[in-house]
Image (cartoon, rainbow, N blue to C red):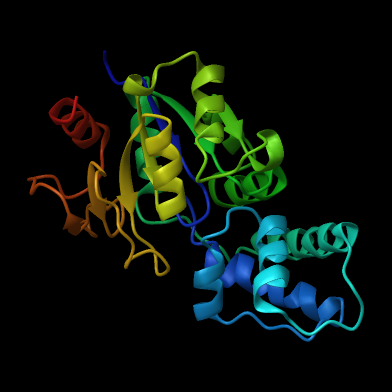
Length: 253
């Protein structure tokens, strides 16, 4: 088998969306609905163990017993999440969210090497569209052969469903792809699908266990910002390029 595709997660992997994007939008949505809730960074880090915004809200209700003026129905959860998404997209459109180091360079490098690109994420398609178009341009979605997002599968990460879906749509085997992820649940999802993964840590995942990853890095790197290997075999490479991914791929076949 040869390497044919790179599959990206989005939140925390392609862009710095968690703290200044999703967390801020959740708290503003709570204010809009006059809910006496506030998620600080530490609490949000705990809640990130639950994949999906609506699911995260339900988990918070069931496990943290927040103050309620009235019982919240499933439709209330959907409405809160929709408001949160609206606020998040507005934040994106104002240019407050940036790509992570090396992402645009790696996307361009993959195209130059005729590798397919895909997205596998639990965030909504509208969020993905807003993130990509605000950072990579209006035709950014065209870079990706498959964009699997939100509720497109029944079971979200850490289940393998989203990656299984991408592999099926690209008509590729797991041995022909490499994943770029940042979270423990994303890593578990990719691993369950039989995929090998490069991890780029973020502020919420630097303490997590990524045993079995191809390599764990602080970011993808640029010429003037070399990556640091947190866990993995030393290399002469200083940024994640297609050549470096192929080297990792060949060493771990």
